[in-house]
Length: 211
Image: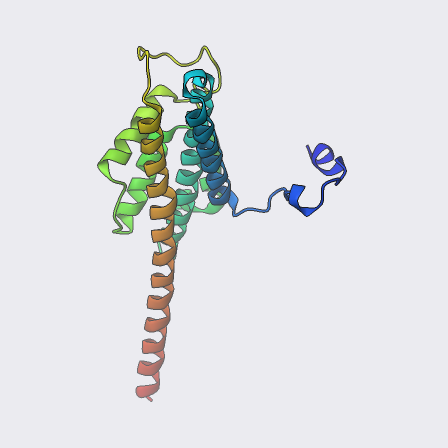
C-alpha cells in the first residue's frame, strides 16, 4: 500500500493532496467514515428512486464509524480507570488492543457493553438506552462486520427502508458516542489531573506545616 500511495505523481497542487495517517487515530478515522456516510446520504437524496444500491454502503460506513468510535472510547475510558489506580492487567494498552482486535473484533453489541462497564466504573453517565438498543440491533444484523459489505450477507424481511429516518438514527448514535462520550472522557481527564495536582499541593502544604 505504501508504494501505491507514495508513487502517484502530484499533478494538481495542494488541493488534490491528502496525507496518509494525518488524522486523530480511530476517533479521527471514525469521523471520516461518518462524513463519507453523510456524503452517500446526500447522493441518495439527489436520486432516491435510483439510489437503492447506496443503502448498504451508507449503513456500512456509519456502522464502521460507530465501531471505531466505540473502540476509541473504550481505550480512553480504560486510561481514566488506570489513572484512578486500578491495576487490572486487561486494561493495559497492549492487552486492551489485543482484546479489541482478537476478541471483540467488529462486534458492536459487546463493544457497547464493555464501554458501559467502564463508564460505570468511573461513575460517568452511560450510553442512553435507545443508543444501546440501536447498537444491539446493528450487532444482530451484522455480528461480524460483513453483512453490509456483500449483497448476499444480509438477511432481512424488510422490503422498504426509510432512509432519512435510518440515517438520523445512525447519525444521532454516532454523535453520542463520538461527540458525547469521547468528549466527556477528555473533560474527565482534565478533572482527574486537577484533583491529583490539588491533593499533591495539599500534601506538600501539610508536610511543610508539620516541620
